Image 1 (cartoon, helix red, strand yellow):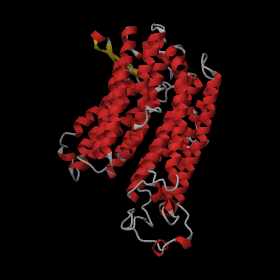
Image 2: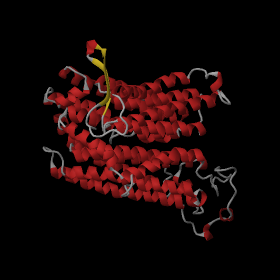
Image 3: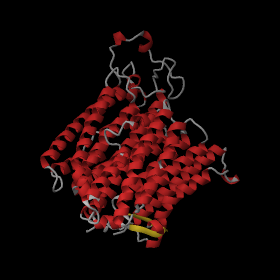
Image 4: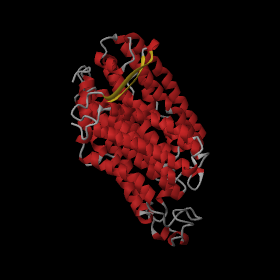
Length: 550
């Protein structure tokens, strides 16, 4: 069933346009604006250009989704297959199915919202031309990662995002930005070198780099020892990008230093590339190797769940001087642990849960980083002790709509039933209860119990954040100084007073509402109607795990 019948040639064009248009837009952003499009100044023209290009890509993605055959989501659609490097057997092979389509749309949506937000709130740094060009190159790389069906093209797209994100952190970031950017690039590049060796091993031993053919073969053309080596090599590169504990240490620094839109794209899009690689490459192409490493992957995943939650609890406690952006970054380590646990079960239930949790994390954590960025702009800091304030008013009393939206995002992140965060975690735990044949049930049920304990820890630190940031710390009136008892006027809308404790903050602005509302609405929609995602992913996952057989 398709909502609108679109010819295969038009579908091919749309997918190619989605991948290539941001790259062409990045080149155009660096050129002088035509006289009729300059607006008030060149900076405004290039920011408008970014919104236009990402908006066009999003519209093309929506049309692609409308023309997608929802009765056959396990079939690759909108495919293009052209010989590129015949000597190596490398082809320009593009296509989407029920696994990649939601990630493609998520990437296009988040990038559009980031450029829209930046049009009104550009981070401090060098030329806006360079900023928009880097965001567009980043978008092209992420969209290509989810659309290509050749192992070497996947690697090129996977690596394409590193340089833009490095410069976004290093040039437009906050304190310690250069050190954080170097840490990010070194970790990911070292992981990628190992991953390339694994991809080459698969291609040379099987005689093809075509991901569809390899998935259909389902590892029958590869010996168990080759599969084990390939999974180890490729898995390390994917685990760094995911990030999996203990290869996660670059993430908190990168998030803390990155500008708001950099954090949104890093959490909402880049982390998904690693887990997508596990599902698209390792599960179908090297099943025996995955089965060997699945218990270890699950063990690292649940350690990450608990570790991330404990780190968040440590940052959230009173007097810890914890940074709210850093706390949300550590929460991503825990949430991506659930994704890895679902993948490690090697069951349709677990993998569907992992893919659902991927999308939910992109929506919810993207919204959280937008909100934390806005709070930091208003207060001038993301320090939790400062945000809690001395009078107990905090966000509910100073910017009630902003406080309410932060509380909504927090309860969505902790997995409240009826919101998107619930289904992914629940399905991954169900998958761990009954893992694939050949995996130890007692071990995976232990992992399930640890993961379930992690959900309680997640609820604990998220509720502490809501209480402190939204409600503030309660200080008896008698203990307040005369200056604290009398609210001081802010130096400007949403700006701190000279004492650093604002009595009033600017509430949600129109451009912020435009950028944040789609994420909140989709979080509710996916929570109330999970079939909208599971109906796409489940048939594709069933086929993937069955070796290309529907």
